[in-house]
Length: 275
Image (cartoon, rainbow, N blue to C red; front, top):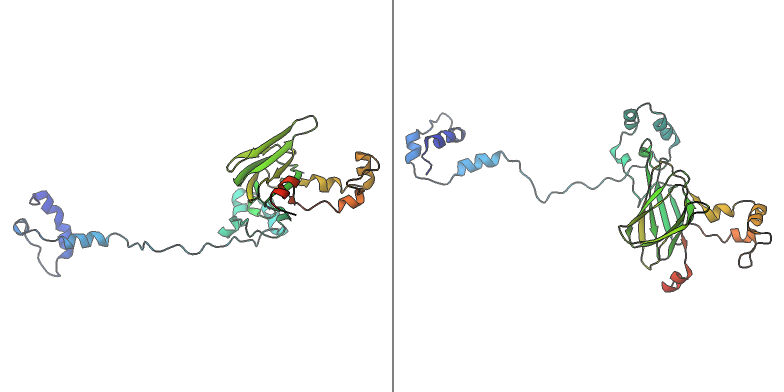
């Protein structure tokens, strides 16, 4: 079966590897008449050219995100003033500085209240975003969690639900209708730049959403907190003199406005047994 001259010639380099020092290779006639035996030598040579892989080996532990340049004015200034993109890139020597951990974020990145929290990665908290024109936030809304009405003055928002579901609303400007939607997991909506909008978790389980922005610093303004932060005479004039809410005047009402993310709506709180 293997007595073809071409086949026998092809074996010579392998046989040379296994020949003893000073030994002589067998002749082609010897090889052709020898009884076939185990191809140990050929298999050994072939195997020696294949690197050994340990199937049970695993990579080292994942390195944590580096936060040493987060919220650092000096570093941020250098990145902003860099002449070229490659110069900016070279100002960030650590690979792990290009990683942002929403579970363990840098300081001054969270907005937290009784209903949950939002965590933002913008040019201040995550300087590698400088020059990209993009930023992101994650919202963690507990049962009945309510991301209170707000705007982003410098960017539209793409909002994607990755866990649970959300009820969303937005209004573009005076004269525009209010757009309302319920988003299931892996569904998304868009809030136009500057539009007043809100997200609400109507369920008794947690919900998580991703918010993407086309600006490194999209900004945020909570409407109730900002509005009632205006002068009392301005608020009273806008709402009608003698304005009260549940018996509270403007000064008293300010202290009742909850931190974002808040709890609401009443029917959800009752359903989920939340006081």
